[in-house]
Image (cartoon, rainbow, N blue to C red; front, side, top):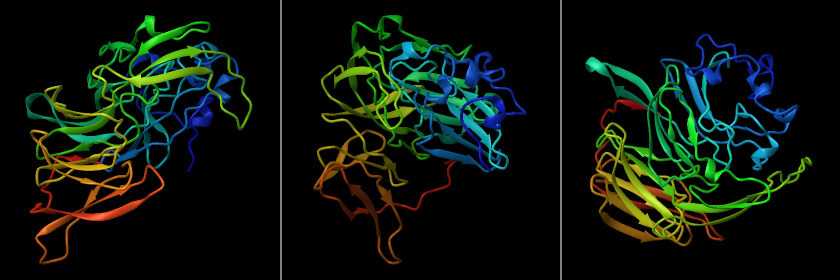
Length: 362
């Protein structure tokens, strides 16, 4: 079974039984009509990030990458189906729904980040099958995963490239003063091209109910220029200068309460964070930094409990596993692989209890 991402409807297997939740994503052949003539054929929108699966709804969820070139003046329209999220029937490949997180993306803010599936508190004690997404555009989305409708969308990072998300229409609200144009440089656009958060997954703890987000605090100056499409060569059309955002730090580790829709604590890091996070049932959270520190923090307060210096910057995924019978410790392993040296060694953490049942699946 194969399902193509772009082009005419008959190519994409998008004959959905449930219409997309918002009018701008409904209609026929939007993957062609939302581009200039023939541009959908070279416009990007591939799948290179994370997938999540719901065994009850039998849906697989994934995001799509940015449109090309970065110079958005060369590709008028919303540029579907880039920088958005699909839900597809795992048996047929047909699209159940699609949500366009960043229409007509201006800043390389593709939407391939992880999707965390949870049971969400609804009215009258009901539980809503939902999905949590810390998006590249800087907003933390809570969506009904049955139909894609947004339940909330709040900024978890500093943003001035957008003015918010309209919950009625589901549409991202652009900031016109930050739109790049050929012949001028637009300064202080936040977040920059890597987004408020790149590919590295966050972690959900059913013990605390918090999402732990390793992310970025990077802004940019951007000038657009004409790009020619030549297969096998860069297709960008922009000059970009990136630098630290407000406060001067380039990385942030944020504990986010998705129900209260607020930050619980944050840890500022000098360098960008490209390490995934790990939360354990023992009340610990782990992540690594680009200057080689592997850190364990308290899951409720963010207090640093210990840290270990590795031989390289850390971009690999930390994992934990149960030790052999009779050992009271639970090792934690991480990969350090941002330079010429690679290492992966177990680090012991005391008295981590086996995970208790959670109201989420991923």
